[in-house]
Image (cartoon, rainbow, N blue to C red; front, side, top):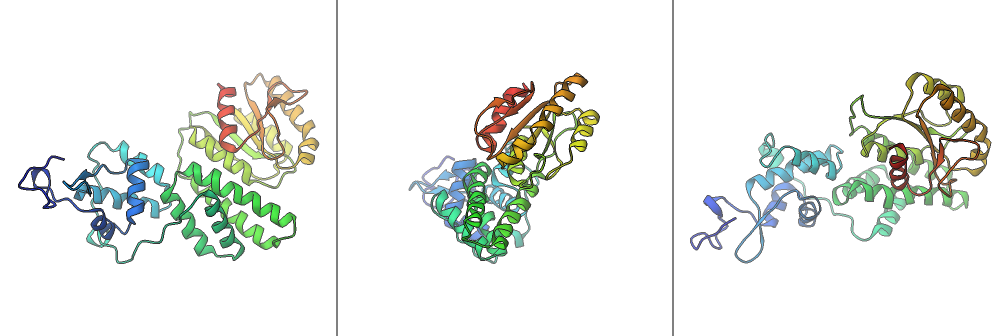
Length: 328
């Protein structure tokens, strides 16, 4: 933005375009000034000019862009995805026109969560223990608005899930509290998967819990990051039958199977299944690979007695990166 002496300090910029201060933008959008700056700096949502005194100056189009992003976030779209979608529209995206009601919200912006990941985890954990559904949803929405989805999943939700399980096993919380928190996280993971729509010709990855395994959240995290990496994902649920897996192999011929395992005992018991799956893949002449991840996996290796069954250690995002290299 270029300024001249006639416009200096007047709030009027190049070609007499009205500029708004960040406080004015906050009032018009219902977004806190902190959140506006985060969206600007982290996601490049807007590129404000500067008043002669160095303060940010926003155009009417900037306000419309922020309102558009706010609407998408309110609909459940992560801010990172909404910003990418906006950028794909080009330098002057159309279709952002909003009604007067939308552009002048009557409610004040919610207080944004502050602090490091540990503070976020403790806050969310306490909401779960109180069965505060509304509070947990509001807090989750605010985290999505402030941070990239990867951070929310790996630094907040996944550790909270582990902490819930550990506290329940130690007898520090009741089963109903652990179930409430786990179900809340499961619902959000499944909803996030619906944000991705892959072409039918992209590689198919079939995900499921390892035989006998009922803890499905680990493989849901895994599935989300595989979707993010560009794969087509099908989820078969907890403890699928071995026959169902074998039928799926023969009929669908996926690029890979990915199984989640949290119990060393159940993984040990499932070894004959994995060896049989490996044998059938070879017998059909397929290039399908099999991956096992989760808390029971401590290292990267080819499962003894198999050729294409791999264990992948690390969090869901790390495991997906390794999987991509192995699939090629």
